[in-house]
Length: 253
Image (tube, rainbow, N blue to C red):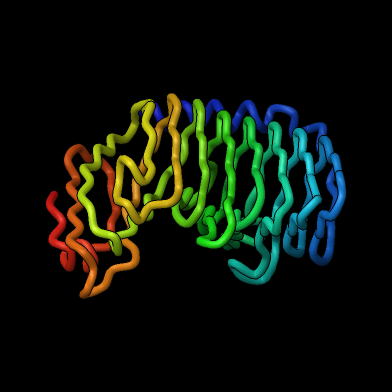
């Protein structure tokens, strides 16, 4: 078993070690958080979206939040100015009916403070171009079918001692040149932002002793009148990019 597999297995064991103490609670309809809520030791089967309104704060400790529904993306986790705190918690979609139902995490406006947290059955954790989405993760882990954490928009992300796939949204409309070293399966200490990438990048991603098992590189705001933009992939092991956009910009590999 490789390093990533060993770490992920250990993380899953640690987070689920107290699963036998869960109380199962089924909730129908959207869970809208407007005040201060604290939930511990629950397996929450949520047939609806989790919405974190401005001024709302939800703390989940030793929980499993399972968003269910008839199809993927039917229900989401949606930050609308609120705060989510997760400790020893699994959160995401489901495969209880034999088919994976994925949720999405819209960290568009608010804060996610996550420690010992596993994300599963996800179609990505994304941010907005209009409001800051902040993720502070310690021992933040990818579970089953996690997709990726997408660094884009006004995201402010810090991952420490974590294991998770990462997508870099590189904005090309202001030109620039960047060289990407994206090794997999080894702990990294690195900062990605507008200084290390291109001037059009307004987000920040800091990795501290964090393993990225797979990288995605997405080129954004491409146009025929843009300034020259060159992205060089220098050290890569497991990277997925948008090939048509790479060809358009003359990307070197």
